Image 1 (cartoon, rainbow over the protein chains, first blue to last red):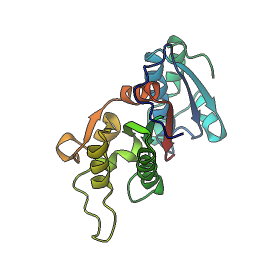
Image 2 (cartoon, rainbow over the protein chains, first blue to last red):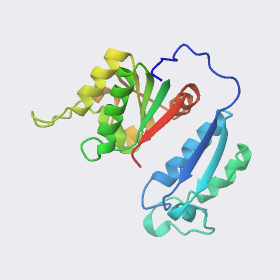
Image 3 (cartoon, rainbow over the protein chains, first blue to last red):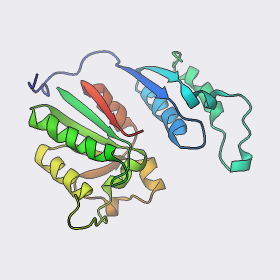
Image 4 (cartoon, one colour):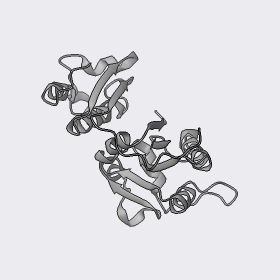
Length: 89
Length: 119
């Protein structure tokens, strides 16, 4: 149980990363930064999947008008996921 | 086992930051390895060497620095999150360095387990 395994060679092939989105889009920065992590993970050719639950479904709503809170609407960025071969949503 | 640790919670506000440190120390004491700790969100404030907690309190930055020195741990602070909060190279505590999210993903690839502390 306590045996160190630091000398192990890196395993071949991509690893699975699942990111769990639980936050509404603008009240906190979590939704935006999770998307950034997803894109970086995908650019490392990893096996990425995304789960949207609780308030985490709100970033997916179409036609968000964010000018009133002076924040950029980042929802269109989700469209880039397809280009990164992230299809497990 | 090799652990990767992610710290999302700020020091002194959330216990998650302390828990990450205690987890790392316990894992190392058991003979596991912790190659890298990645600081993200308010967790980047951990790296601020200008912090001065009261004398009878734990010094969060200093104890991370010491753990890193004793066990050769790579303490990485997310550049985007850090610059937003004024955390720059000139105020980093010893053992910390600023780099990108790629370091987080690389840690995930190389570790047997990724353990995330904080929301």
